[in-house]
Structure formats: structure tokens, C-alpha cells
Length: 638
Image (cartoon, rainbow, N blue to C red; front, side, top):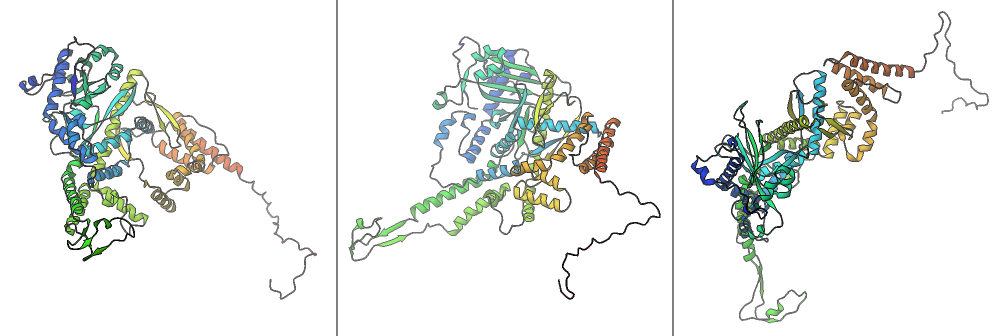
């Protein structure tokens, strides 16, 4: 960050912490700030480490500024050292230049393809009885609610795009108003020592952030005096950045992981120029961040971006487009040639329609010249564009929103999409693992809040779109071991036409019933119709779930689908009895099934009375024919 720090006017006499970068160099380029004995040494060590790493990693800031400009023609001037505001103004390209931004096109297309898959964390417990399965179900409901209230998928989309542009995307997990919250963090805010993070597992991490003074005071009211006297900071040293009405200060937040199991050198500290604002021990094995590297490097912590991969190709495309534009402007324009000896009035050569002009001698010659560029020149530009998409693995047809010619059937389109997906199998797997890491960090922080406050509730939307509360302690989630895996939210096609075709084929093959197919379609315009169609089955499932989880039941009534009651209760019985279901609950399932059988039997018509043995049975007779009916003559064909 190219922050400029100025003296605060609130308390000019208060001592401020000065970063001693030179001392860091003299002391083997490192200060163990996490072992400081007092707040002054702790703040000075943390700030000095931050300034040292920032000064020695200016190349990272410059690279990110270039990659950001390649994507959106906007430099990260407020995160880079020195005065990048003037650099940003000086390097602006002309607005009338020809553009073909394959970097932005490829990244946006890839982001759309990967992030449309919403990986859903699935909890699996160690044991396999029905109680553990019920625990896993509650955990899944809790995580669905947390992903919804923290807007996890929106943050993951931004994280993926940041990684494609800068190299690494980051999401920070923090507590806000006694709830778990997520925050997007740019790679430019984070500092990792190169040697410490050579193999991708650094032991310390520092985040430098510009934050509003009043916001920081509300977060740490006990340290309000320090925060008020802290030195003000701006984005950079430019005049435009200094002329601001915002009152902001720069804050350094550092983490050091424990050196081993049982070690007490883990620490989490927040400091500003006036001293330490927050300090606690850190006994976790991870930083409160989830990192996604677009392309992990062989050595080092930060990843390689798609912008870096395409930078050379993009520069060559820009250069050739500029050459073509200049050639067309200079050569391929209409020109009028007039012989010197001819008497042609030049004023008559104008844009007037049907104008009459006079001349004597040789008439003027109208000529349009060629660009002077060969066909191979323009073909090479097209080859460069195609190569850029191939390098990232994105189809140019996908970027243009088109499908290959002749690809008309639904099966062929699904096969084509599967081949496209295979190209990003590794990238998609890393993206799914990000959701797993995010789920672990969310559940750990939620457990800490629940243990401290005794309560942590979240709300999730069930299959019937009804909001349900889940309380973390009541769900017995604090002591049970669990393993998190990741699954796609839906394996069905995401487009309505493909989803309809897939579900229809499954119903026609007998894999699913009509009711299940209605539930899988999940079309908004058919939601009310589908809700009514599956209402009877939803009611039965609710009662059966209540029997298994709570030991409570409701009697079967004739308004239910009795055959479905028998079918589902039998399935529940066979599933959960094998999972050590209690006998009283198993008996409830048997009673529920028997009630449905009794109602079916009661609704059947009574059987005809039995005929005594030896008594002849009545032979059915044809109904008598009335004498009033006309007699049909013989031989007449009806």
C-alpha cells in the first residue's frame, strides 16, 4: 500500500510508534514481534516488519498494478508504493484506440463457467447409526444457512475473479455483531515473507488495511484514546488523494501460527501508529483466511494469474491492432486526384447530392488506396486471439455465447459441455476445496461464539422454501467429530431446457416418479403448481422425519396418500432400523404403516354374501325387451 501518514491533530504530544526498518536489516532481516514482552515493543515490531516486507516486495505491487490494468484498464494505484496516481494518469491509453481485450473476455468467461457450480459442503460423521446421520443432517442445514447469511457464494465468485486477475484470491473469516462474517481481501493487502512462504505454508501473515477511525473505535471502545491519537493516512502522496474528507488510519494486523502442538508462541495482534489495539494468543493451525491460487507456482506462496499468462499475447494483439488502425487511417481513405492542367473547380467536389460541376480537360479521378497490409497480417491477429483463448482453455465460441455448428441435439450439447469441463477439472477441484476450507473455518468460529455466548442460531431455507432456525448447541455440534466433503448443489443441467430434458428422460426410463420429477424441475413459474402436486408427499415426509428425530407422530387420516404412506414408512423403517433406531421409534413407524393399511381396508366396498353350499347360484339374465320397441326386419343391415 502506498499510504502516506500524517501527524494527527487530536493529540500532538502523544508518543507514536515509529517503524525501524533499518533495525530489521541489521538484525538478520527479522523481528520476532510475537515474543514481545510489552505493548510498545509489540507494536513497534509488528509495524517494522510490515514496513520492511512492503518495501522489499514492491515488485509484487507493480505486477498487480499491471495485471489489473490489463483486465480493466485501472491500476491498483492505491495499493502500490510511491505516487501511483500520477503514473495512472500518465499511462492512460487513448480512448479511440482499437481494442480486443482477450484478458477480460477469457477471465469473465472462465469465471462464469466455474462459479456457476455452487459446491455444497457435506458433513459426514464417524459413526453410521441414525443419530450420527441426523447430526450430519443438522450440520448440513446449519452450513446451508451460514452460506446464505454470509453470502459465501458471492464472495467466492469475487475470490475466483481476483485470483484470475492478480494470481491469488482471498476471503477473510471474522466475527461481526456476534455472527460469522466474510470479507473480500485483495492480495495487495497481505504480506508474506518470501523465505517463510517458499513452500506455500508461511508461519506468519500480516494484513495492512486503511480503516475509518470511527469504525475502529466502535470495534475496540476500550482503546478509543489510542485510536483518536493515531496518525492519519491517505491512499498515496498525491494531491488528489490528500484532498479528502475521510478520517482514516492505517492498521497492521498480524498472525503467527504456533510452532508446534502445545506451543504458546501463536499470537494475533492489531496495531496502529499509537500502539496495540488488540492482542490475543492464537492456537489455531491456520490463518483466518481462505486462499485460492489460480495457478500455484512451483515455489512461493502467491499464485500465477491468467493476466500474467496472457500478457505477452495481449500486448502483441494491441500492437498489431494499432498498426492496422494507423495503416487504414493513412492509406485506406478516399482520395481525389486532379490533373494540374485541367480546369476543375475544387469547391464543386463536396458532399452535396446531385451537385453539378464544370470542368475542362481531364476529369478528376476518385481513388481508394489499400491498407498496405497483407492478408496474413490480419490472419495472424485472429490466430493470436484464438491462441489466447486456447492458452486459458476457454472456447472462443463460449466467450461469444455461441455453440459449434451442427451441435443441435441435447445429448450432443451435454457431451460438449462435459469435454469443456474436463479441461478445468483441476481448477474446479481447487475451487471446491475452497468451499470445504471455508466451511471448516465458519463452523470453528461459530463454535467459539456459541461456547462464549451459549447460543448461535442461523436460518436456512428447506426444500419447501420455508425458513427454519438451527441452534448450534442444541444440534449437539460442539463435541462430535465430523468430516466435510464437497458436492455439487445439483448434477442436473443449469439451463431450463437441458434440465427439463434430463428430468423427462429420467421419468421416461422409470428412474424417478412423476412427483420426484416435479420436485427436481424447480422452475419458478411452476413453483405453485409443483408445490400443490407434491404437498401430500411433503406432509408424509415431515411426519416420518419427526418420528425419527423427535419421537413424535401424527395419526394417518383419509386425506393423505395412503399408498405413499405405506411406501415411505416401509423405506424409512428399513433404512433407520439398520442404523440402530430405538425400538419405540421403530414401533411408531410400524403403527404409522398399519394405520394406513387399516384406512385402505376400511375404504374397500363390502364383499358379497357367501352362497350356502348346494344352493344353485343365480344365472345372470338379459334385461327384458319392451313390446313398444320397433321390430327390425330380417336382412336389414344395421
